Image 1 (tube, one colour):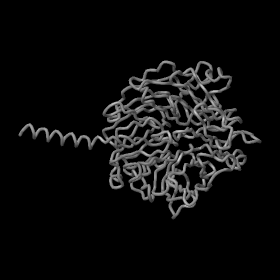
Image 2 (cartoon, helix red, strand yellow):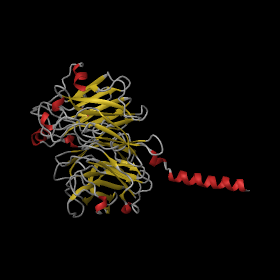
Image 3 (tube, helix red, strand yellow):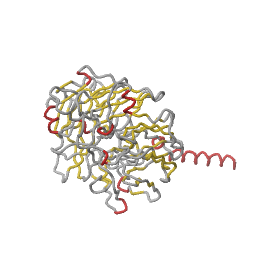
Image 4 (cartoon, helix red, strand yellow):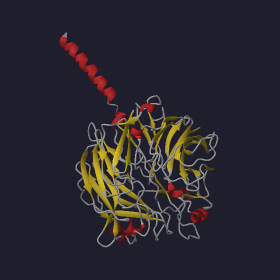
Amino acid sequence: MRNRLLVVLSCVALGAALLVWDPARAQSVPTYHRSPDRSGNYVMPGLTWERAPGLHRDPTFDGRFEGQVYAQPLLWRSGPTGLLVVATEENVIYAFDAKTGKTVWRRSVGRPVPRSALPCGNIDPLGITGTPVIDEGRRAVYFDAMVAGEDKPRHMIFGLSLGDGSILPGFPVDIPRALKALGMRFISAIQNQRGALLIVNDKLFIPYGGHYGDCGPYHGWVVGIDLASPAKVSAWATRAEGGGIWAPGGISYDGRSMFVATGNTMGAQQWSDGEAVFRLHTDLAPPTSSRDFFAPANWKFMDRADQDLGATNPLPLDVPSANGKTQFVLALGKDGNAYLLNRKDLGGIGGALAVKQIARAPIRTAPASFPAGNAVFVAVQARAVGCPRPVANPDVLALRIAARPSPSISIAWCGTFEGRAAPIVTTTDGSSNPIVWIAGAEGDNRLHGFRGDNGTPIFAGDRAADRVQGVARFSTILAADGRLFIAGDGRLYAFVP
């Protein structure tokens, strides 16, 4: 009888442990906004609308580092706790214990480049800016670092072991040298790497644009590196000067194709790849059909006014329709417009399905999406215009994207917010209890949460103990292990319900 009782108690204890150890909480976050489609929808089973107001900074977590951070932290699930990976402008990668914040390993990959050594820009020093990407199968993390060389700065691609931070065989890859071997000229000093990296079919893809100030004859680039053989490199670049791919979300991927958005080109009289959304395949062959690109009809005006379409990454969306799902791509520009595109046929020049002005100022960060009944909502940081009801300082909003009765964009709600960061969404199961989270980067230095269905504020981070200092513009949040992580200058913050 006693043995039987022990078996029963053991089974109860095991069941309780399984309830606590929810698989949704144990997943890695290997790329920007959680997945290659850049949806930014994180499943957090315990973070309901009712529990969200009790969020607070975890006093037991203490992740410290040196330098400024623009890149999103990543999570590698290697055991019960996992590793948080943080990349800094000092060209240092840190791996922290995801539970305590204790440094597990640290790797410096070379001297960053001082602003004085560059023709323009607004990051000083310049090191690792774009969000790295993790390959779980290879147990590796890959990133671009701007490294000060003996004669000139160089963009270098590194691969590190997640086990100890050691540099992997075949790395680093010197981008100017690798492209020179292909007969292509890449000048590191005038190119910047802000966009998130992506892995598709065992190939690493890195987007490039220019520096703040648009100095020099830079181009928009996507460079591909074969991870099985890093010496094999391919590339695509805009035909005209300019056309940078600089959105924080970088490249998005819907399971079939990659999508990038380009900015303004310099002096182009005929359209030459600027102000556009492109569909790219893994061979990086130049698109030849209007089905594979879109640009607004007024692209030349946008060029002159510096109203980049490439300020945010294209966002693939699957929206409920009469036939199941309609496949869209949403693009957002510095012109304040939202453009809804047919993902199967991007439409060429002027071929958007719907266009709507949603902001009175440039849109520059990454969006996040979540299902909402017979539509999809998209959270955006922008100075909203046309809100359904008056809101003071409407700097965050949710768009409603619908396919029925015809493709449409409307503003579902607007929220009061002060900052310049990229939102994410948490849901308890992929769709229920949606909460839009955003940090007051270079603003009020607070974490904000809004009900995703109607925009009601449910967390304002107004306690002094919950302030987040030194969060850079364009920054975004990592949701994992039942917590929200935010990187500021020199510190990684963790919030718990």
